[in-house]
Amino acid sequence: MKKTLIVLLVLFFFSSCMIRPIYVPPRVYSISSAVKSLQDSYLLVFVEEVDGYGPVEAKGVVASYVHDGKNYLFYGFKFYDESPKVYWKKIVKEIGIWSSRTYFDLLNSGLYSSKKDGKYIVVWWKDVWMFIVESSSNAEDFANYVMNWFAKLGGSEGW
Image (tube, rainbow, N blue to C red; front, side, top):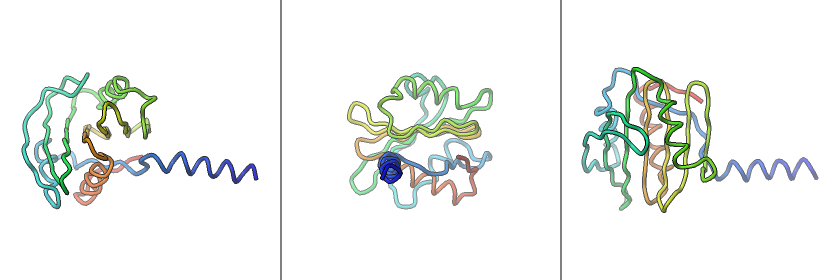
């Protein structure tokens, strides 16, 4: 009985979070081509350069996608001088660990998802890349689509 209760609690905990391998595009991609490559079943509305996201001050791009009447902002950053993990941790700290739906902080990658102030946010990093998906609907669906797309491109995988 005790083992069954523990198993049910673990399954309940993991059913509400995003568990998956983390994919990013191959290193040879530019940040602009990485965020533009998703035009399969999502409509690209615009792409523009940004100077950061929240506490992250870095050059990157943001793309707006629409699918089934839902809007998604897709931010991308590529870092060469330091690890994207540093910036990922700043975002996690600002949004808050206690509001997280998913939090995996590993040596070579990280995945974080949360809902705050009426918007869903998913942030992941691996290698030289950091990506952020933001939406008023479930951003985890779009983030899963993005990572599956990067896997098809032959991108690097991590847990």
